[in-house]
Image (tube, rainbow, N blue to C red; front, side):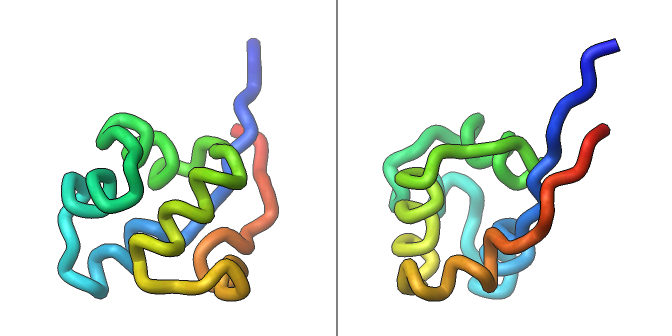
Length: 75
């Protein structure tokens, strides 16, 4: 059985705290809603996608640890 790495993050939690929809965040970040769904479920994403999400959440790159700091897990 193939195991997938999960990369827990706080994207959904932070997005919800801003009362921002998935569609709005995806549009602002220039990514698809499907991509955002995968990221919020813990799938890996590229560093440039992380940067776009941070900027769309009105965060700085230096704030990365607030959103993308969890250690990967195997599921």
